Image (cartoon, rainbow, N blue to C red; front, side, top):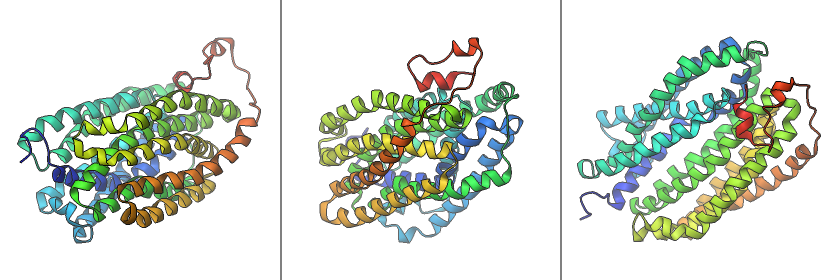
Length: 411
């Protein structure tokens, strides 16, 4: 039997399967609406609070229904999801899905408020609480502690940052943008969502449906290896995604400087992502070995994910440009193509190459999309910025090195 303070590989596999399902269902609205929040909050003015509340409410209702449907169809999803059966486990799972949707939307709200500095604070609080609970619950809940540690930790981020958003950040945003506010009409938001929501559903399938499909086709122990590798790779991907969201906000706020901000975003991403991905590629076996010798089986997979994270820098930058320009039809086409490639290649290669097949599927698909994005992005980067005249006191605040973190902090 495993030591009393550690989880068996089967327990990790079952817990990770439940987490994958939670993310997939919450993402039906959360992932698909974060782009809209980043696009429209900067100009929402007095309607900002109402926009956030309505988004939270609609998202919670939709994902709760989706979670209920998932629980009624557990027989279709394989043995890894047996632990979700029963009314108590089902209610906890539905609550977890709703909470995760709020956590995801919260990042979009903070980014739209030009307060993205709080995003890593919330993510760090969540990760620290999750790690502490993962250890603390090993003895008390050896079978469900992995999933429970995620669910309880959500509150550590959502509750304090939710209070901060509604009591301080939204009122400050309303005052700061009173002169320039131009709340979007329902028609304008609807037109944006028609393209962005469709594209985001494709993105959702790539990020969250793949782990669910993998969990349904391999053993719980193998799924544990996939879960650890994909979690590490996904954490690195979030860096590129969050930086891209900041570019969307700046592009919406000041479209005349889109080219300049785009160049700044790429410089910023390169400084951070290249060293991180390089270290992840080289140290992959030792990083995975921390979880146990058997986990090093996923070393090739984690290395593929590291290479894919570099390609995502180009892709996410171009996606951010498209959102800032409200060109969501093109965004939907690219995300749809990525979805078809990743899902198709994963289903083809997983049975033939094992876990490595999932990595090859992702890197091959990202190469195609990143190539298209790079060609399109080149035209954006070459475009001259059309600067507006700004007062001397505002000019003094400009980021001297093109750092988006500085741009996002300006009022």
